[in-house]
Length: 405
Ligand code: 3PG
Ligand code: MG
Image (tube, rainbow, N blue to C red; front, top):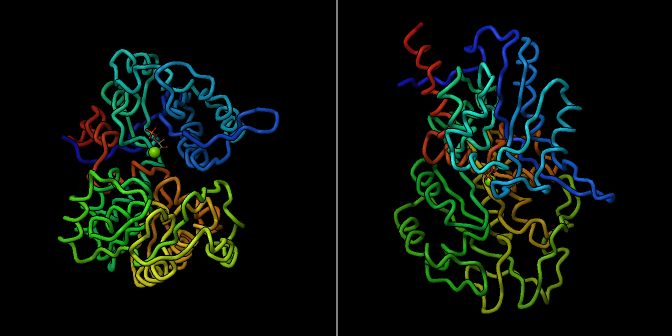
């Protein structure tokens, strides 16, 4: 079996060749005043341009394909790719973009007949869809079995960057993980607890840990099915740092979504307790009273996390510290974002919410590597490989390269 990931150069002469390119153009859409769907963040489209430019410049005929959202295996006007196609064509003319792959049930089912229909008439395949390389979907793992195949520039870069985190991170290596669902990230936390020097856990998932340690969590989100596993992890690791305080909302206080507060850095007075009604929002220690629900790490925790990040030579951040889209609960995420941006070490961010936060605070250019894949980057760090990468390494072209022909 091959170990080397084939790259664009390995495809050889491309003039006149028909190349199928799998992209991850699963971008957020917004609906404007006239009811038109438009792309609200073009990060993933921009990230696809180096590969498309490479192929077009070498005279290839390029057909691109992507999924968009999670339609149920049939056409659904909410998920047609028209707004993506429009922007893509504006940014780089000459690429044909197929309709949403997930309009066909064969995509998620990895149906060989669907793979055959995708590769029909194509000469080569390029996978540049890093964000979906952790899925064994038809368009990700199928074509490399049938066509000479290679990783695109984005996949190549993500693998190099995240690979350096897997193999030999400069130490201290500090990992900050947040987000709501502990179940989704437990395997990753277990694997990172072994490899990182410090593992900081924030976001709603922290309540399953504090609850497991016997603290009251009030009305906060706790995953009862993961209490034992969280307790085990804490007891067997000496490098995990949990929040020591939380910002919580009282009974009946609702989240105000889309109330992010000012964009850009340095507006600290405009978020957190500074804009909260003290009858509705309060700071508690690790125990939260009955009826109150924690929505952010508290100021003492934010300061501890900031100090740990400042000491690091390598930082990986995935997942927000709180419900930062309500600025009363944004201070933890904002502090972590600023600390990661201020780090003199190498810094990595993955996951849609953390990436949205770093962009909102205007700090993206201060980060060494921002991954286009949330789930994919975590799966790569947890397992050291992804189905989409494995398919490329095992494709007939890669096997030929390995045997030196
Ligand atoms: C993402 O946005 O996380 C990727 O495009 C993968 O999408 P999926 O989680 O629906 O497979
Ligand atoms: Mg996802």
